[in-house]
Image (tube, rainbow, N blue to C red; front, side, top):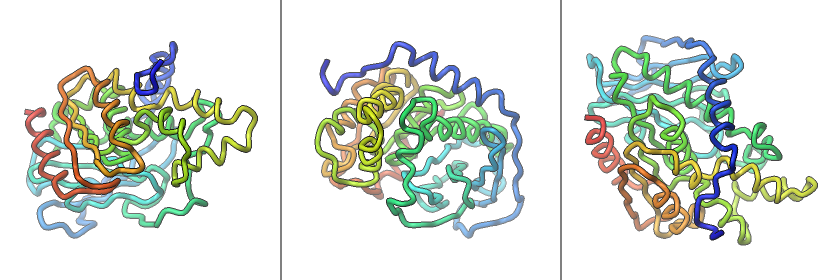
Length: 298
């Protein structure tokens, strides 16, 4: 088997059906501040809190053009780290509403720089059911339900978007969440991750996984087993909604060939954009992703 091909475990669908049914069973419970909580030139921004998995309190923000009703919207998923993404030019789009939240229970506008000691890549990684990303995608599913419930949002025109971790998880939502009709995935993480880990890894945060693997019996084998349920290449095979993917041609973290593998695995309508950058934001992501979302949410 070639490293770039999907390698979906036999019980992949059953594994994720169980996880999503747990999320579906959680009650829809949210609260908005109904006041301006962040200065923005074109959008009204409110804090929004909701009940996450197992009763966890999740904090986020909801941004929308003033006076709008039933407009297209997107769930804005954060890249790796414990900080919140902000309702800036990347987190909002002209004529659209958006919702984002902090994956780790921090404030909606929480900011902190990445430190290895605060990393979570290895949390529960010894087993697929205990890896932290299972709960994180469940909370993203619940966030999509919260977004859908807002009167400013057209419940049938909702996208998922993000960069790196957020890009990969947007593809996961496209595969797992029927609320999500369109995906924009910039430099999606965990793309062909088995290929990445077949070579020396020196960069954090991914190296958190290998550091953890060294401390447990059959560590790398167990980590690779867990990753097979989360590899974005495998998830992509189930993501049939229109999906736009981007790669950074100089990206050392999510290498272009790995992004290409994820793109190739997508069975539905798709588009690939190449940016002459490393693993970083690019201004063209704003208009490019807005155009893709509006075109496919029409």
